[in-house]
Amino acid sequence: MNIKIVCLFMASLAFLIQSCSEPVKTDLTQTAFIPKPVSVTATGTAFEVNNSTIIYVQNGAEELMKTAEILAAKIGKATEKITIQPVQEAPSKGIYIAVEASDELGAEGYELTIDKKLITIKGTDPAGCFYGVQTFLQTLPANLASGEAIYVPTGTIRDYPVYAYRGMMLDVSRHFFPKEDVKKVIDMLAAYKINIFHLHLSDDQGWRIEIKSWPKLTEIGGSTQVGGGEGGYYTQEDYKEIVQYAMDRSITIVPEIDMPGHTNAALASYAELNCDGKARDHYTGTEVGFSSLCTDKEITYEFIDDVVRELAEITPGPYFHIGGDESLSTKHDDYVYFVNRVQKIVEQYGKKVIGWDEIANAELIDNATIQFWANEKNTKLGVEKGAQVIMSPARYAYLDMQYDSTTHLGLHWAAYIEVDRGYNWDPAKLVEGITQENIKGIEAPLWAETITNLDEIEYMVFPRISGYAEIGWTPAEQRDWESYKLRLAKHGKRFEKMEIDYYKSKLVPWEE
Image (tube, rainbow, N blue to C red; front, side):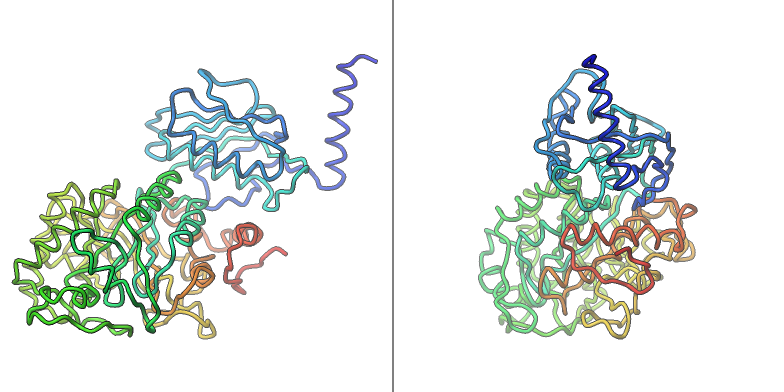
């Protein structure tokens, strides 16, 4: 018998066997993508991923190699080995990743084309390529098993985000979380195209980042946490490792040093930062608003200059968050004077200022960003002064809020935030007078008064963060809860495969 006929027969037989055990999916539009792409078209066939599949990377695009390695690691769970190979031009088969400029798709946009023999992932920039890969991974079964045939429905996805800033904040000050836990959180966020990870590095209860010129900040300020535990901190090497890990996954780290309030850990570390020259005792409770740096002492600004300088040097991202919230024990005029000076220090070291909405009361510098969490009046004032806005409304987007009255973690001073409430809001319509052109993006903060470990982080973050990711990525007119909850239901298996201890909301018909 002709060898070509034999090969064709065997290939057809394998396809038929797979079809009998589990029908091969060929309609790409039926895939439960989160965030929902801008457009998906299907062509009715399937691409087979197998041991001979090669990932080809545009030659010279070194920044794409890490993306290819992440993809290879995922596919490798079902195949013996995946090879990565640089090429000068697109191959005829396999998986091809390349950067190709496109005014239509814009920053972070991508086109994913799946044919029977070739999958092409073209991003307008390296981030777009990474997001195209994340979308492709959602076409694969959640439970990849070694030796199983994998078929991917063919078609084309063209996609780009609504907002450039799509973030989550993790409070590591109330309770400290080791760097390996932080990396796990980054992995979870990357899967849903979150591109900002805001680290709340200092507060009353703990100082979590090494500042070499002020070593007592971690020696004393980092030694405890809420409830009186041992606390902890990141060395600068730890921090750089976290930053690089995030960058490899197209995520920018935004460091926050909260000031002039929320500073008891610093005030306990250095007596001279207090107006009376006396060091404060450690604080392990959860009340707010009682602490303040001394705004009329020059040593305060020398301290801030050193902190900003050292942290800016190891933070390649463009932003530095100065906090500024709940400074209840700082007089208004002192607060305004302080924020004005601190903004200039941040600008001096090449970073753009972000602050909670209270900083709008100061004279905002160019490129300052207001993070709306509670006060609409402050936020509107910031917009009037030319600032962009990050939307983090506590009543919709705070991840530390309980799902309902039975939730064993979290608080509910802002609201109970079930999965539908977390999804059903539009940043551009939430505050009268603040439109999409004023908004840089959205961020979902997780404050850690009641959160003590990674499992508890996962429980409060998932599945709500998937909805926030879609709000930040997908046009509002293409979003609705009824269709979203059905897509979300299919992601329960993905959460389990990622070992995420998520909240199984009764509002979602989870697939078993």
